[in-house]
Amino acid sequence: MYVIKVKGIAKIPDYVQLRDDKFTLLAYFRVDRPDKSLEKLGLGDKLPYIMNFVNNLPFGQIAKLDI
Image 1: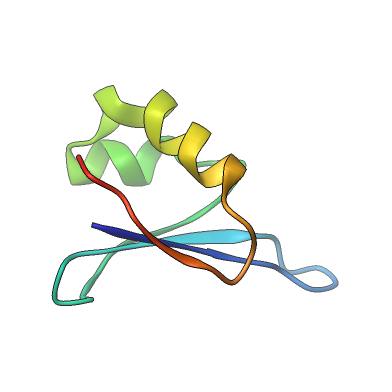
Image 2: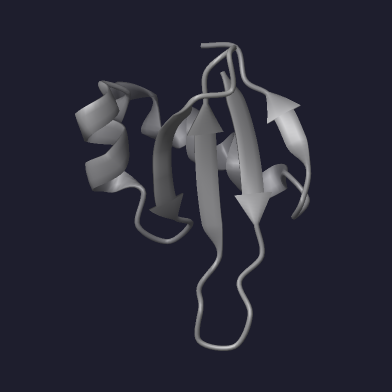
């Protein structure tokens, strides 16, 4: 799974994209509201790990997340 952290501008908030190995979009959520999206994806139990990874990721970078 890949993670992309997108910086918002003006009134648009910061977002996170989760993509699979074929780069298909799995989830797209605000950095400050990941709960519902991760629950729908079945990753609610991995929320602290994923958000720690996201918070340490620079904006605009793509990183591989092993879950």
